[in-house]
Structures are given as structure tokens and as C-alpha cells.
Picture 1 (cartoon, one colour):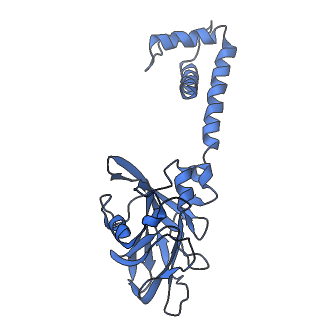
Picture 2: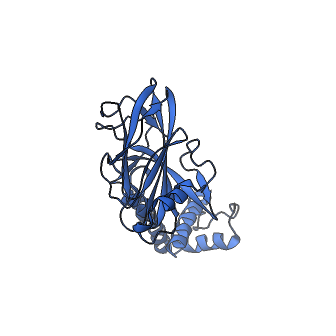
Picture 3: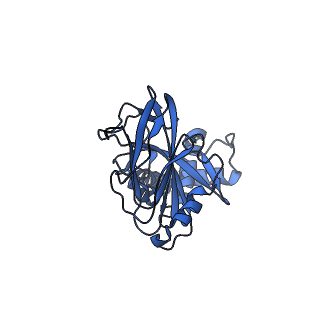
Length: 280
């Protein structure tokens, strides 16, 4: 109802401004454009003797538009997302002071049958993480705003910078009005290295079980029902290639919160920070 009301007010204002009026407040008959004659007659009526009603309609339309705009946070994000995420800025990002990667492409959550976190057995997780949900899964990083067809629906990818070292998947879902329980989250990012780095490890924490792949090969899986703890599980030794590397992850969540944190550490256990992270 309010949407139609505000649209009508905005369109009417545009007609009045573009058409202009004659000596007696009459709209010039030559200006019809895409409007029906009924709409032109309505504008004439409102502008001749009912100016107050006309102004009220325009004001109502502006107020509705303002309310809609205030529901958005900075950079067009939902306001509820603002404490946790920001839109990606131009250029690459570096890991934070502790080496955690904050720049990600996040896919809107996929519903999966999870009634309780006790189902996170090895066989269950192998099936969940091993299934193919959408075209291009685990391959090239998707584009911001692109859609993945999952089942009969389409889910959108969002390029985001996390404001915290741990990426709040639960908040991501709720701020978009998406399901947050019994879901599977997918994340992807690009890691650019100035030189080849051998013997590094992925150090991961996740709330809910998770699996992570580097350049198409599984690097580490966090099994069972767990809370997010920094450096909870460390991968086997890996190699970051010189140039571009592709990092994918999947986190499954039953009831409760869901988030993750991830960084690379070197052979001495120190955070790797001389890398650049991007999403395109």
C-alpha cells in the first residue's frame, strides 16, 4: 500500500514538473508522454484547487523513500549488517595485524537438513561438503552480485570486508533476512603472493563444522559440533604459489551461532601477512 502511494506521488510530481501549467493551472494538453488521459486529468484536478492534497502526496512519497534509505547501512548494506561488515573498497586488502583474512565473497545460505549438531559425524560431513550445489563450486571465484542457481532457487554472492577478525555468518544471514539455522555457508577469496611460500599452514576456527580448499585441493576439515576458537585446527603443510591462489571454504550450521576465522601461519607459527587478499 505505502509503496504504491509513494510511487504515485513521485510520478505525479514528475508529471507536474515536466508538463508545466497554463494560465488557469491547466496542464498543457500536448504533454501526455507515457501517461493516460486519466492521469493527466487527475494532475489538473489536484493542481487547480487541491494544491494542499498534491503537496501532501509528494511529501508522503519523500518520507517513505527516506525511511527506506535509512534502513540501509553504509555503502548500500542493510543497517543490521553495518557493525559486522563493510562493502569491499577498491584495491587489494592485507590481512589484519594478527594475519586474519577479512575480505570474502559470501554466498547466501543454502538450507540443509540439520535438526541437531549431533549429526555432524564424519560420514554426514563428507556428504555435505562433498556434494555439488552450484555450477563453478570450488573453482574460479565468482563475481560480486552474481547469482548461483541452487536447486530451484538463486542465491546471491556478496563481496564484504569483515569488521572483525571472525567472520559473522549468523549476522550475515539475519541481516539479509535469510535462514540462519540448518544452513550451509560458502566463502571464497583470492590470495596474491609476491613469491612462492612453502610449508605454510591454514589455521582455522569455526562455529559449526567446516572444510577448506586451497587451489582446488582439500586443506583441512573441522569436524563435529564445535565453538569458534582461534587457531583451533591447523592444516598440513601447504604451498602458496607465486601470484594468485584461490581459497574456498564451507561452514555448516545447525542451531546456534555461526562464524569462522582463518589465517596462514609459517613454519615457526607466525602469521603470514605479506600477502594481498582480493575478490576479483
